[in-house]
Length: 484
Image (cartoon, rainbow, N blue to C red; front, side):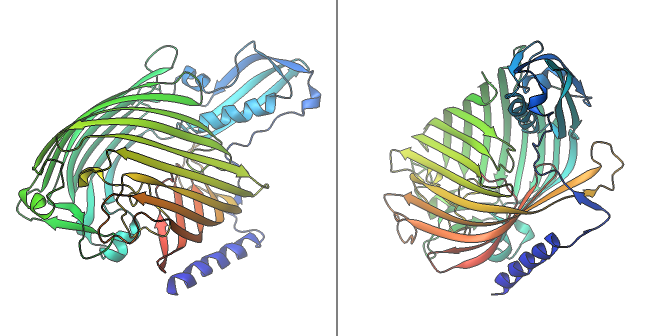
């Protein structure tokens, strides 16, 4: 009841804020959408117009052709004047979804009734982030705060060096040096545009990690809870990996990814004693080689928090290894519908099929990870080799404003905020041949609830959700990760 009171208090504050005139001298009304564009009236043009020129301003690091790659116009192109507004909106949408810019202003400037030029002004992000690294290693914030008593033993800390847009081609170099719960090092370089046609890319990385504590399997005494083993004097798992991916993007919305990776995992004897099926061969050492293909399609107004459009991906993965060997099919979709100027519906679905069905523990994960979970079941882990989740969310925007930034910067002079109230319901299912004492496997799962989403700059989304489930549990949950 205490958590319910807190969220009702927040809802009351938000309601009052929407009815207070002159919120603050520091606050001004934000644009209704991050992809809103302004165009001259269509009836001021002829039936078709010629794009006389495309003018780019505001960029310093980004190469002009990287910007032009996302624009739905070409110099000299003739298009219908009725198509012009949609082309402008698509261009801004694509530029914002590159994550290169904090804002994009794009408009058609009329020369005469038959000619226009496209004026594009961008505000680049900061691309260099040598920042301290701090991360909770638990599956979600609530698990760490409630079940693990917000212990600092379960956090990672170190240095996270990110150099985005290294050469101005939207390529990224990430170096992580992390200690704490997990000791790890990783180096990764991603360049989606290695050729002149900007259709081919590469992604390569390598690293290692080691832990003194390890999730050895499901807790035999607590249904759908994870069991851990810890040794202060030695590491229980050591893993090295390297991977390489080739990407092909023939058009603006579609991307093909082919990936190959190799890994080497060693666990302590104590892990295998607690769970002899941790690996398939009842040993302490496993080598694996993965080959995968993924097809993705994105047509969203704003990828970090979409309100309109569809995105989806489907993948096929084959793992070869002495400790784990399987085929996997996976897919997900995200469909967003605008009902009114401030109301939206979001429909999401994701599924996994892994075979053969009898898998070792290391390959039997399904629901309960940050990438695939049900709202309201954050405290539970549900193993499986086949299953998925379907979600429905209805949301309404109640606040939209900017706050003047204390930073003296032309590109970061304002901090935008958008606040949404929402209600939701989830369905899920996870199949496993041997579910033991699990209360949640091999049956239809249901959760529901309501909440608040806060969207601000640099793709940050804060989600406060009060959720219920069929077990009779209810609680307030907090998430910061972007939803799949």
